[in-house]
Every structure is written in structure tokens, then in C-alpha cells.
Length: 143
Image (cartoon, rainbow, N blue to C red):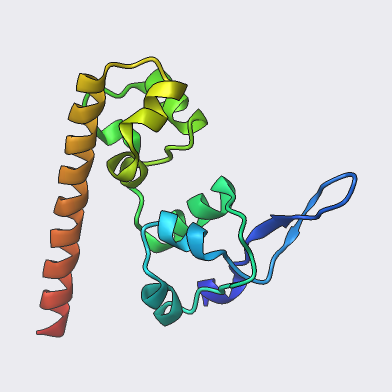
């Protein structure tokens, strides 16, 4: 099983921090990956309730493994340079863009609020489209 091999990276709290394999993902990492805690339990994703840290690397790993990723490049108006700026600001995909607040992005990236609203609306549209496709594929499987 792929889930059995999947472990998060955590950082040691020493003078020279290094990464090591963790016990499980933090609750915030699972939520930011677009999964609920119930889904994570059903998918047998390891959860470490003690961890309070979030690492973008772990969030991206969860998104890639469980198919909740819609790349920013699918949103019209976002090119390679804008995508890189958004990733530096912590917005990795359409899901992150759909849930982020304008004030947090505007401080990190010089863009107008009108442009951000347009991108956010399109990200939500893509996410709804993906959810309806998942529902119809599940319905077809159950038949």
C-alpha cells in the first residue's frame, strides 16, 4: 500500500536542524491538503495529534498522493512567473487560492484585489467541477 510507506518530514529541534521521518501528519497539514480528518482516517493516513507544525512539503505530498491538486497554471491569467510568486507566498494550488484571504496575499504579492477575486472565483469553479466529477465517477462505480 502506498499509504503505509508515506511518512511526513519533520524538523529536529537541535542547534543544527535537520529533517527526519515523523510519526504522522499534523491535523493542520491534513486540512490544508483538502482532506477531512475522517477521510484521512479512512485512507489510513498516519496522524500525529501532538504535532502543531505545518510544512509545505508535507501538504504537497498529501495533495499529490490523494489527487486533490489542481495546478495554478489551469487558472486563466496565471503564468509561470505569477505561479512562482504564489508558491513563494504559500499558495501551492487552486485549493489554497480558493480558501486564502485577500489581505494575506496582497501583502506578499503586488496584485490588484480585482485580479485576485477573479482568480479565486475561477479556482472555486474548478474545485466544484472536480467534486462533481468525483461524485459522478463514484455513482458509476456503485452501479
